Length: 246
Image (tube, rainbow, N blue to C red; front, side, top):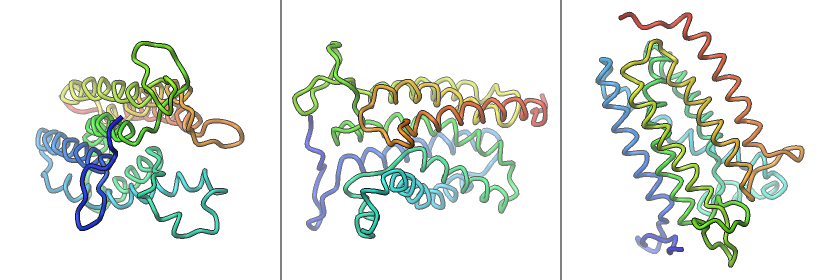
């Protein structure tokens, strides 16, 4: 394992986790701007959205995590806001990001489904890169295994579930990127993203040992099932109502 601290500025430690997440955001943003230009949208729509979405995504990811770990955080406000010690949940960030996208597109009078398709091509690429931040923090790993690609965590050989999800998300990105210019209706990309990402996350989450829980069940798996159902509903609705003219 590598040192999780990338460098120090004025006594403040900057973690590889933050560096990698930022890199993923920049690359994903570039791809989103490229796809926006392809369908005639200005780059400014993407950059403005990212600037609005970033703080809300962080807040959403943190709130999601804190809610499901309330017994640990309750009564300590400073512990709640101290994200430097970890505790961000991707599902919370995604929910916040889509809410911001909805209100942003309403304000700018942009087609929400079309805009969501643009950003949902890039999201899995950002997730794929960002998962390597989990590697530097020695987190998001799975159960004990003797498979040849197992990694050593605290003296035990375990599933590198961060790697599984990184690969799954990268393959999903390639698929959605290639599909984007051939899509038949607005909403096709976002619905397929919800379905395919959630299928992979459901099974990968089953291997993890650090999952958030609710009523004895893994929260991420329950959310994944909900997103699969929602994704199918969006696909059916959008395919009938949001066709793109040839």
